[in-house]
Length: 239
Image (spheres, rainbow, N blue to C red):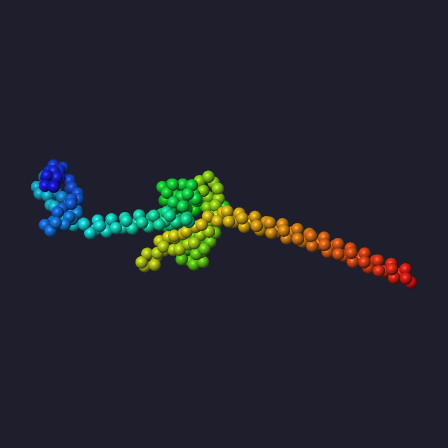
């Protein structure tokens, strides 16, 4: 370490530039700490380095907190990626700040191709962009609270539309300021297709039942007329 520091000191003296680096230091009690070190030159009136000031800061706890945050972030990411639904976070500027693997699969893009893009301009069908943007902007402004659930299509890389059933929530900071939206979406395209087919079949069935009922009623009316005519003829014969 002393040799390494001597090299850095020499660099500062030779170049007149500051030097910033990290060093693991073994304390007397045997614990290892990470030290943030800054070497700053002091120059005379001719610009020559005469002294170097060394500033040290123990950043062990900060680094440990960062590591814990990374672990928590990665764990949260794993939870998102194993989810069976599309999960996407959108900031107030309408840009994607997070999407899980299911979302990437549905859209047909990689995460890098999606994050940072305007969600509505890139992943909503053109005919729906204006309408969906308008709803999003009202939510971001806090003008509506009735958008917890909605259904709207997305368009994937191949140009195919998929119908998504969305559950939405707002992301807020500690002061209640809206930071964006977090949405989970289920691809209900096949279910909607089945529902449409069932609706079509029901309409066809209702039409057939109506026609059969009408035909039966006409047949009954014919039988009644025939019966009445038969009775009238028998009565006249008896007279």
